[in-house]
Image 1 (cartoon, rainbow, N blue to C red):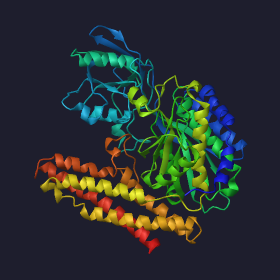
Image 2: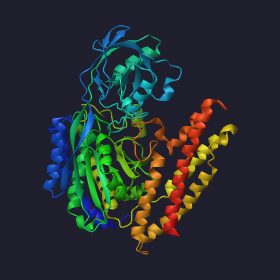
Image 3: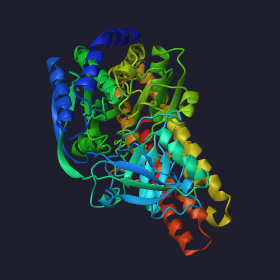
Length: 591
């Protein structure tokens, strides 16, 4: 699966930890509060372009318009029982309170997912919820708005005495809004508060007391001109295909680990690859996304919209590097598309043997704007804390300091940072230099088979629903694809070993399979739109099939039942078509 070890090691030895630390410190200390649209963020983008050009890398700014918002100072007080000021900060992209503020009863809704609202009437009230990725902030807000809440207090994660005020964005609309989704922009105020104060408020509510809270916040959204740095190391003898390596540049406060550290690694990778251009099988493009924090993935989605044709035809993989080098971390985490599972496991086996590892299937978070177009990814790959530590911090997957003024250079551990840089370098080097693309579709087939069987069993348990969305033929297509994927993998390995001379056809087949299968497995909106950020249903494989929950929840032969039955059949057909096309694509090569 991997190329010659000696060449990879020589490349990795060229990556300078000292140089990366200099860049990381420059971002954190010379350009704190890199909020997109600000002079500070523009200066940081210009620094990246300048530094890469000095290293001989072709670099230039990409200018676009983003729908942005700078949070203004906010206030929060407990009015009853008693009186207490609550430290707070307004999240970006919120609605404003009336000039005199908003006063309402407080209702605690746990993590803020759909289930947390069962039996609770929050209409006209302020909800208190946990800061976590279950679901992410924008999805909590979308759900709260749909339930009629008038405002939201979001308590930070970490230990229960954590005094840090969380920062962030709560915009559900992924990328710039369109006429079809502008109505989803939040119209209610949302404030972040320290966990210690959230725990106090939660105790009052759960103790049966009627809690009244006053909050005041103001926010104004506007279109702004933004520059994000882009670069390319071109393969001199490549066929035009490329790897996209990226991560967000904008940040709250110093943002040392989120994401100055990731940006410095990408800069160092570009420098080293430029010195090894003659060994590249395909080019490597770099992007340093803006409007990730105050805009929600506007930089990456703008890049997709502008370079759609090139990405669709030529991009083989998207590698996203974020939050590297956090102190106290000991477990390697990778989020990946299943066709790259074998690939990144091989890199990790070679570079971090003995380090505990875990893998999540790639999720539609963190600038994963490319699922719809069908580009496979390795993302959010970094050292993280143990599950026990994260649980003790109430889900703080990126540490107590995440999105706060505590994310300084003191949070970055140079030894762990070097480890992250080497693995990121290994991913990039192997993806850019291996003759045959390192994609294995057997795990993808397993994903499809498992999910389809699970949904089929749920449907079969209810007689009136079983015939609505017949999945048996679709399961058969997935099982056939498993056999086709095994035959394809044999050919791929033979080509990698030099036993067969059809590398170009194999690479084209692998790329086309990702285009056909990825959007079905990871989106609801499809190839040309973006799902709302953190949409709950996206946690499932083939998320459009979760339509069966609505079908099974409807009364038999009711109006609602027949509405969802029509929808279910259409969603079933999307999956069937993708698998039929996938089988035909592999048949064209293998047979």
